[in-house]
Length: 343
Ligand code: ADP
Image (cartoon, rainbow, N blue to C red; front, side):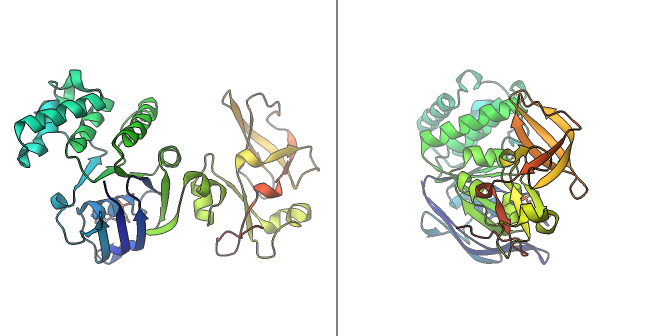
């Protein structure tokens, strides 16, 4: 168990920055998720913590120890990859045992740890199978088992669930959360999927073009995004953004002087009669998911505002409606994309 601290980490590839001035403090036992769009530097950051990438400047501490120049094998971390990276010719047991053999862990201790990992991950009946005889979810569990038996201070997960189908992803998500509770270890998890981040993390780190955009608890980021970028990235369907000048007088009179754009989440837009809200629109498409419905609405200025309503909402496609934006649900952003604090 250990805390992880990064101080002003910079990393570039051939002069192109991949991480810029990243400073983070990850508490002992935390489940931290690095999230952001493809190419924002998530994997590079994780691999830098693992020691698989060298950094140009800055410092990395694990458990209070400066590991910036330390080899990956001496950092006391275990990494789980999206690709599983299992040896195909070895059984599950041999795959899980391999690293311990290399590290000269005594045989009885190896047996004990394999049995324990097998129990935690419900792999006991598969220990003699080859990876090709397992499902994707079981293979990923073996990869996690290999990490568990190292008894690392920190677990590092690089998009571990991306190769699984949607149903299995949800199941594995829950298993990983349970595993975290059971082991109490520090876990750092990379994903581009904001739903995974929201559901698993106790702290989310949003990255944008190699910089830390915001750090916070999932609901903190949902309710108080500091920038338009975070506001648009966290939450599904994504937040709607509207320009102040296109809002009309009725819609804009309650805004801060500095506000250039407003954001409102699909679940917070209210439907009114035409002419009664801040904006009149036409329902272009209606998607009914059963428990909820999405209205894709437009007018001359906007072609894609999303409104989330009840599953039994009766608004038909083609209807002309008004939209109201409750003030307490509005996010206001200035010209630079920074949130304007609302009192
Ligand atoms: P993410 O994991 O968020 O998708 P990465 O950390 O993989 O992003 O990449 C961050 C940036 O660094 C990207 O612009 C990517 O193209 C670049 N990059 C990553 N690995 C290498 C590499 N080995 N050589 C050159 N550029 C790289």
